[in-house]
Image 1 (cartoon, one colour):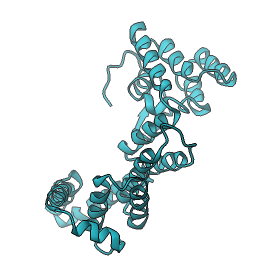
Image 2 (image 1 turned 180 degrees about the vertical axis):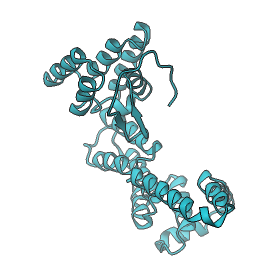
Image 3 (image 1 turned 30 degrees about the vertical axis):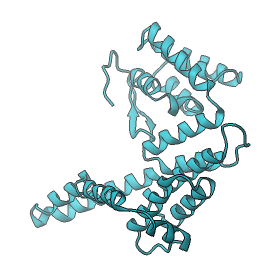
Length: 271
């Protein structure tokens, strides 16, 4: 996160935003997070924890009181976000007005589509556990002109991607199977099942998928899989590991411990 700070509050206990992997030390940083991540903050970002941070760490008692009163009134929660942007005066009035219009446009979306957009946001931030929770909740949505079989198929595809990235192959396969059930005409689902099998060779595919895959030209799929594997081999984590083992033996164990701890933390954030 990069921004220009105009003032610094004497924050002793920063406000953590785990979805972004950042800690906030000022009202400007808080405004920046709100302004740049509307899908993150649109529903439940302004809670008691944030209001306490505004009150005790930013020393903005007046703003905290207004937020608390507005929250208890159960009126439009979007006004809480606009209130923070306005009172902190980090953004101009025209920028706040632009943000207001953005929130209005988001609220005009079908509730299920907005919820999926939020889940997609968390997926993009590697918050797979949070994304899964939102996707699964959407599966119970009432059917209408938006929540149709194609929409449900996309939800199951998203769930499959989440589970695959968490290395839960059976759950990923089940999700893609459900996606195929709702939309068997989408060739991308079959490709995802094929890629999942390549990633987890021990996975047992149903005969219908084996037959469908054998009947297709998988050259393009194989090329994409190989490209993904190449990118994985060239990832920063692998480079860090290679560089670690080029060091003197005395430093390897210490460096390895730190690297493993970092990977564990990244995995926990996925959950």
